[in-house]
Image (tube, rainbow, N blue to C red; front, side, top):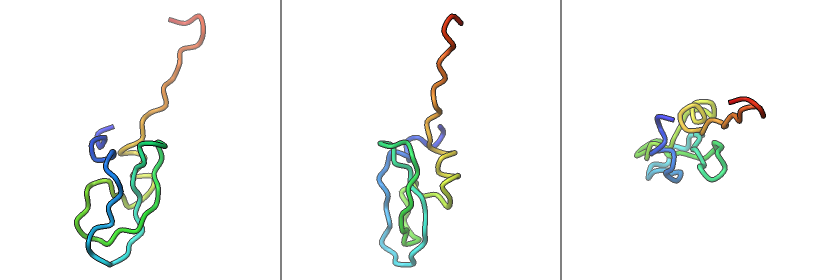
Length: 70
């Protein structure tokens, strides 16, 4: 995915305190998780929705060919 380098960063709430619900990509589990963002100084691994997070960061599920197919 295009956002892969930023997707490997840990969640970062930032120094501000205007709590906002956001999503970050957890590369260890290949899922997006919710966190509280302070609304300033994002590290990039910060998405407005779980769907946007998965679209930017999730690894596609490998598709194995059926047995007997080349």
